[in-house]
Length: 401
Ligand code: HMG
Image (spheres, rainbow, N blue to C red):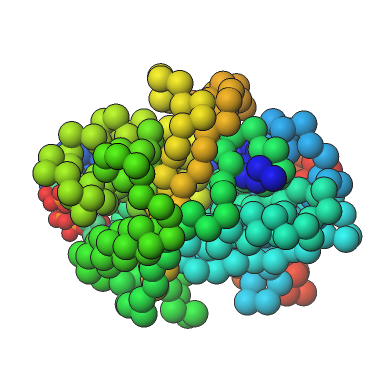
């Protein structure tokens, strides 16, 4: 049975910041952000947007592009490290807002940026095991990356959600059982204490942990997956998508992966295997759980050569840490499907914020989880309204409250 990703949906806030302008405001050379980190723009969430609104929009796009009704979903997992509640999962809000059936398992998965991959692997196994009984799974990777203003992490923020429709006979990428190498280690590279809205990070150490995880996951992958009959293992991948906190990190990861595979010129394969996957992340910034899958969407949409039937590798990293290297096969026509899904156009519809406006929105988000819900009769896209009697309220064209 073929199992995998049948459709990808994306949601980003309607606003973004040019990193060159942020650099000037911080008295930093713009090239440090645009070339040194490899990020050109980052998505900035407004004060009426959270992981619920982003999840619902991304899920809606994935279902629409696949022509699948919400009633066909039997499992909905939201991978996020930007929860809206200590107990009630984002997936329950999603269930109500998009009308998932009652006989549907819904939950949230947290492990930093790895939470979405945890969801994807669970969904694949749920279908393979037969528990799905013909139903499909929705895995939503939704996050708002937030570091303090004027900190080194500031240019590596971002916000967005990627929804993956997972099913039998997938039309984008299929995955075989067992072709996964795993690595985990108890490290303090990046975390967010319960009392803080901003992440705490030991930035340079986090880069080291990510690269160690590449090595660990590759070693395990080699044990699980038979070596190719000839040539290097990494040459069997037509493309590789990495977790992209910023583009340069993916470049470093690729160098590490290829060098460990015996390549003395590890950068030579970068353009061919990786570059197309960094275009969309360079316009959005880090979206934590969704960033690997944004890279996958980017390479499917933007690679000019045909990937039909070819192998793509994915490297997922979540601080803390847990990482996985796994592979899949690109299904015929997948690139055209992603190109025509509207993902590329979505980024062109955004509005630029000036640095002072971005700073004001950043501050306004600080207490948004306690903001009293305002009454409104507006329609329009789904928005977070605030809290009343400790309940979050949303304004949706379909349903209110
Ligand atoms: P920093 O110390 O400000 O930057 O913070 P730097 O001095 O390391 O410079 C960055 C790069 O810019 C360097 O390139 C410089 O040479 C270059 P490299 O040496 O690395 O190749 N540079 C320039 N290039 C061109 N022109 C110039 C110029 N100046 C310097 N004028 C850091 C960088 C990434 C540490 C910081 O932004 C940070 O802490 N970010 C957050 C943590 C992070 O993203 N870590 C990534 C690995 S961990 C991960 O991916 C997990 C995560 O997504 C969370 C999760 O799992 O949930 C974060």
